[in-house]
Amino acid sequence: MTCKVCAGEWPPKDHKISELGLTVAYLHADQFFPGWTVLVLKRHATELFDLTREERSQLIEEVTEVSRTLAVVFDAIKINYELLGNQLPHIHWHLIPRLVDDQAPRDAVWTVRHKPKRLTPDARHERISLIRTHLKM
Ligand SMILES: [Zn+2]
Image (cartoon, rainbow, N blue to C red):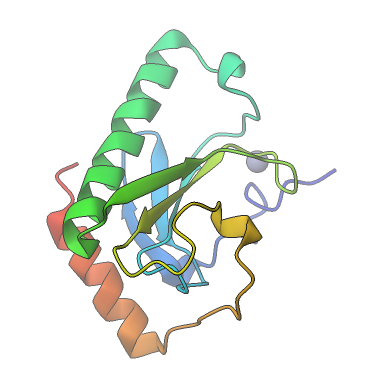
């Protein structure tokens, strides 16, 4: 089975926020939850136990820095960290700021029925730039 990430089919290149050491951050196409970001491992691996100890440490540092950035930029009261891989096993974290006006603050985003919110290209570039300027990695 070909991997959509390794084949360059996902995430969309024009959603790229920044390249970190082991990962690349992308703005998620659905911005119903403002700031929803996906952090994708550059190399193909599907489980944390497939990584070396050093890679795991570096990965958690990158997850942490992107999360901190999203919390600041979007004034989040909580960040959700989701590493599932059921549909796409290549390691990618969903980092989702949950805001004070969240309509379902106790629920995981997957269970919140909503119409996906796609930004216009201009609004997307603006949001990506805003996140990028606050990243310290
Ligand atoms: Zn892959």
